[in-house]
Length: 170
Image (cartoon, rainbow, N blue to C red; front, top):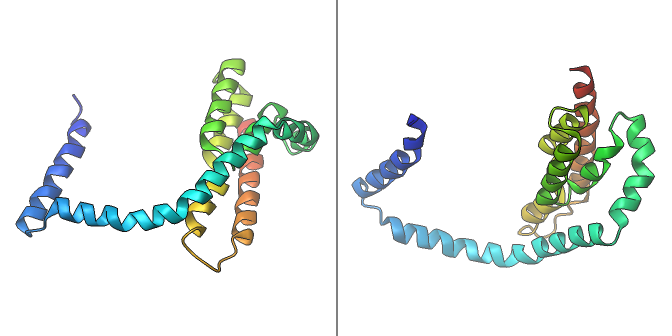
């Protein structure tokens, strides 16, 4: 067995030992921290629910496939294979949905194909922007997340273009 399998239990035991030496009531501290997180969860839940519903509606309405078809020529011009266009569009909305698309691409084209390598890079270099913006901006009132979201979308798209270019070169 590798030594890394013991790392987490040793770390956990070490934290408990240090807490007992300092006379910290670990369970009470944990409960107080969890109680402090509940108001944040209450404020955050509607935003997360809205993002998840919108992501599902985007896919179920057919807007995703129509947008992929419309953008496929532009993506091809920029070096993004049209087979991964749905991934480029879904990734900012849904991490699990994009992981499902990557799995389908692996099954369809093989894990070592150029398309699968591009899909892997797009999946790994992007982020679920709308989910994260809901998490980051929900507790802050008065902040307008439009500029950060647009910058993140541009960065995601640039990462997809550059990632596919690197996959083509390498």
